[in-house]
Image 1 (tube, rainbow, N blue to C red):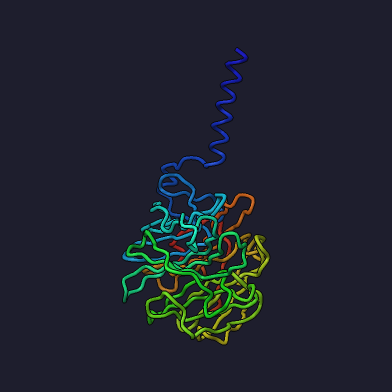
Image 2 (image 1 turned 45 degrees about the horizontal axis):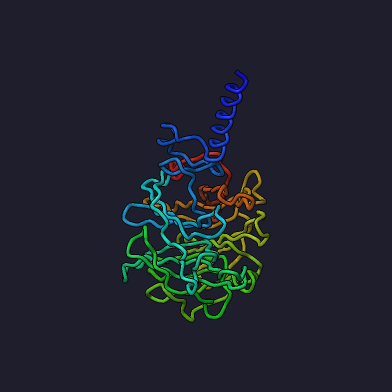
Length: 335
């Protein structure tokens, strides 16, 4: 009897541990949910935790695509891709960019791939991915930008090259396509003390010589968006994995001058960006001046469990305000 009870208890504990690690299966209510719950575990349509960190979104032909770092393994595996029609429910499309087994490749297994962003080139009909790359065995000394391309938004993406843009170090980065389809690379340089922007070539594969210093304030994690005739740039400080206070700059021109207008966050832990760090600002399709702020709550001891914070961006006196919400839906943009 004791043996039976022991075995039964062990079985129950194993089941509990497994559920604690993977989270409960999606209920019908969760599957039908039309709310965002910032900082909570977010699963795809198969009940697996979404693994797309430091990422960005692309909208193409009625579908959103979410690209992000694969975290939780002993080394970088590449970039995951998810798709969604409504932003709430996500389908795992697979590993869009894989690391290479070729020891001569810049993205050989053991490299570090961070902050992937994808844009679509209307002229070449190519999907172009940029990311921050650190070479295998070099720690964070390489500080390079890297480019990959694909014929489909879900990949597979083919690695093209890596480099230092116009000779500058390049770490945390973002991409931005303006209304005239000109594309720009925003990146932290000079050991993250400088934040720079460069216009890309027409094929989006390389930086041009139009490359300028925006400001030198030891900022990283750039997230750039446009509202009307103004550009807004959200960044974080440089405190390693620890969260810190965000700031937002505004300008009438991408090349400046940029004016700092304060911290856009409001609510509990706003002085620490709610425990997260900016990665992207999404313009919601079909809704005027509707933007979603995206951030990662990094958990260095368990990077796979790093959570996502998505919050709506409001405006007061034409300044962005990002208020904490335990849960919210896209209907907030209609209020």
